[in-house]
Length: 356
Image (tube, rainbow, N blue to C red; front, side):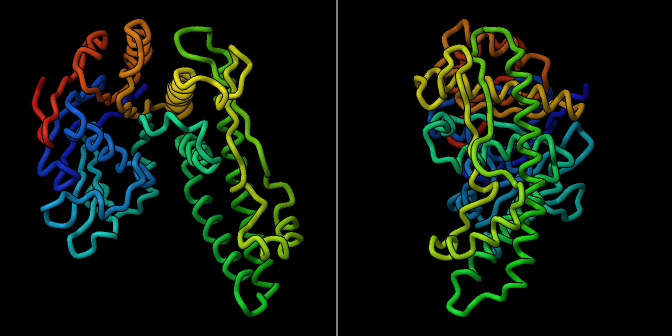
């Protein structure tokens, strides 16, 4: 199986990195340093080389280095052959530019070259957050398996925004235009629903089959509206949606339900440690599923992943990740990665990176 890897990463005026250059390869890349040193910034830069807004979902204007030119650049070589990059110009700091092999490209096209998955401390509260956060998490899982998912999601959201605008206008909306928008929502909504359900079904099969071990086994299910007869439901619900000021039916109302199979308990009722274990189990199983389905192992970004694991669980994590492609990991203490074996080990300090 091809092991997808960035062989070179260049950050220019990105966050607190003025001009960082990293030459890496397959396997583990360990970044150690104090809080605020710039470790997570490196992971965020890598995440921007895939479709979406990156692991922080931050505005582009926040990514440019303070005191820098006003723009930023993230460039990389993939497997030493493909050159990809993204960033902004000082004259247009809110406009993202994407290039593949020197040619301007759409951000959604990055999925054709690179699959990046991540786990961050901010995700630890996923099961306590509103349903919208779990939908976003599920959509990222689906996108790695169904690249067209981003296209359908964007078209669905655009049609829904226009429908909401028409329903909220002072003048009566053109019923034919509403019907056309609802048909568009039904078309793209069906594709969204299918991608999510396919992802959950395939991932659930893999999770259920896993033996009991150091990481919890998770059960997954989709709750809420599907796309059945969506155009008709939208038409019937126009008055209700007008009163609510938003669309109240459709796949944008779905939720990802997660269960701790060993305890038969909903994830949001589990302890913080159990929730972390469930999330880690899902991300690891998904990475393996993507590798099996697409034929290429994704790049994994694991921010502070070892901080709250005991030595036995850390060793089990590193053993499971070994040989599965490029894995970037951060931590405040190099000792957290003592069981990781062979790895590129780097120290980060105030936006500068050196060999450990």
